[in-house]
Length: 166
Image 1 (cartoon, rainbow, N blue to C red):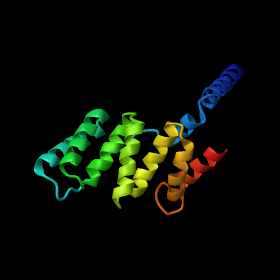
Image 2 (cartoon, rainbow, N blue to C red; image 1 turned 90 degrees about the vertical axis):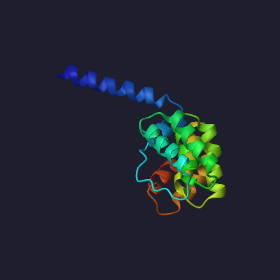
Image 3 (cartoon, rainbow, N blue to C red; image 1 turned 135 degrees about the vertical axis):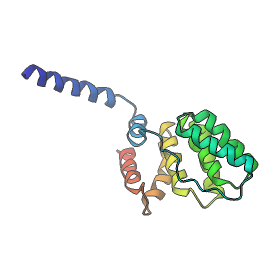
Image 4 (cartoon, one colour; image 1 turned 60 degrees about the horizontal axis):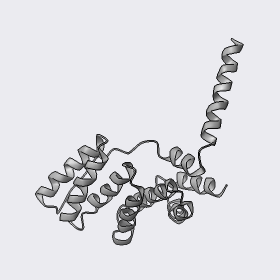
């Protein structure tokens, strides 16, 4: 019995050592981004019919984990409908989930600069992308904005700011 307890304790020490050897940005990113969010409850207005098909296909591809292909569908929809912010946002999210963090940063910045919707969502994923890219100082202003207002990510943003400054 004591051997099992000792083995469990040793395993915990080893696992802790492995995770603590990860760079700080990787630890934070992994803690706050475990898996992709599913896209649901989409309402579409003022888009061309072909675009709706591409958009809906993009949603299905995204939800099944095919992020690169879903990006293509969302991007195509956004090209045909320049103000279809959902398609723009989801193209950035698809790139983010595909590990294309630099490209996703550009899209999230485009949303923040040109639209009033998807503000906190774009700031959140922009922050995580900057953290993943080990550009923590670039993440902080967006995290501070999220932390300063009541929203679903407020607490997490405050926690990340504290971890970055440790």
